[in-house]
Length: 265
Image 1 (spheres, helix red, strand yellow):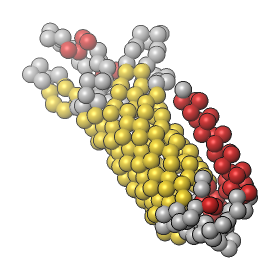
Image 2 (cartoon, helix red, strand yellow):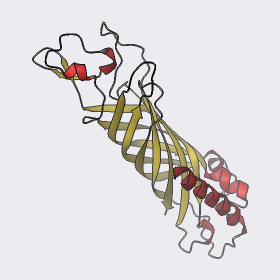
Image 3 (cartoon, one colour):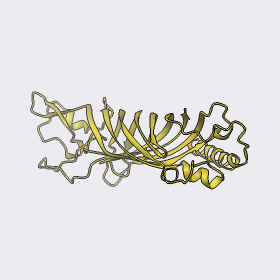
Image 4 (spheres, one colour):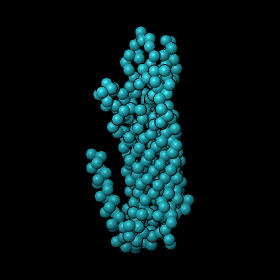
């Protein structure tokens, strides 16, 4: 279903780009630079952590507000609400670990449209190529992430037995909340992370800019986002060996590929 949705939107964007140059400019306001931009959309998330060959996808919503500092350069805020999940499929290792993280994120973003920024004159779009070039953007920012795992992180059943005497299996390890009466650690279910950085790349293709009476217009957003966390805890695990020494130093990350709409005014 998601592939079909993306295909429909892609075709719509191509048709929109081709239609823009042929539309007459009857109102004379389409060249105005809009200071404020509000966007929202949906996307698919993919978590990259300590779970082997995780192919599970999560879902997320995003909202974003931008202010144009100058043509082609924007600063703004972004919020996300969604799920990061992963399930291990490793028959040889006889492992079935899983993680499901209900997360909220918010932070600051800077967005740069390079072709629009360096365009000569007023940057008026006169061809389909101009539309695509000026729609292309890259961005960078920082997100604070609130992770909530609840009971959706796999722990070996033996770890919970009342007569369990050994150390916590390394594959179960994560951030410690407290120790129980037997001295066995109980893991946290809520953890905070920060992205350093978040990177965006995409297109914001205007739909009705050339024939808007007010000069305000809508755009279709197609975005790829790459979020690099400052810790190894997005999936609820921090791998240790049997001596409780951390294995490796690679932090977790997740991607989000999204479709949305933006209103400029």
